[in-house]
Amino acid sequence: MPQEARAPRVDGDQSPEAKASNTGIGAPILVDKEVEAKCAAVSPNVIVSLLNVIRSTKVQRDEVDRKLADLEQQARGALDSVNAKLSSAKDELERIVEEENEFQTLKKGKVEVEVEVAAGRYKEEDTIELKSLTR
View 1: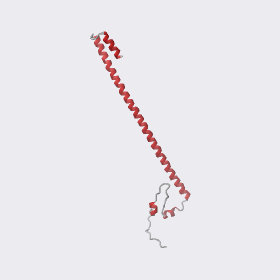
View 2: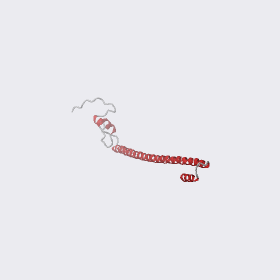
View 3: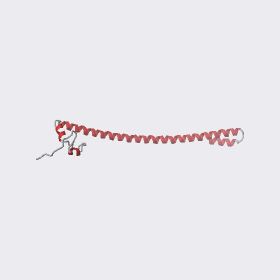
View 4: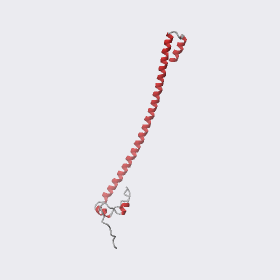
């Protein structure tokens, strides 16, 4: 049988089969004849061992990615919780400030009434009623 005339190969050239192959984990790895010849001295056990290391590394990477996604989700939940508590604390602080302002207004009114009572503008019963309101 006549052999096909082939152009000289340049290192790194691959056969069409090798170029078309998927070299992902678990997929058959196709190599050209030149690479096969160079690798014939490599023990199949070494190749299997390397493939196992590659698979193990991929599994570990996937596990790290899952753990990272879980941690990101936990961080988002914690941030949401902190933001909710912060909002609640802000609302409480606004309520306290409003009560303090009302108290200061009442206190100021009480002082003004006491000054007017001292000046004789109100009767005694009016001051008793005002005192009961400011307590």
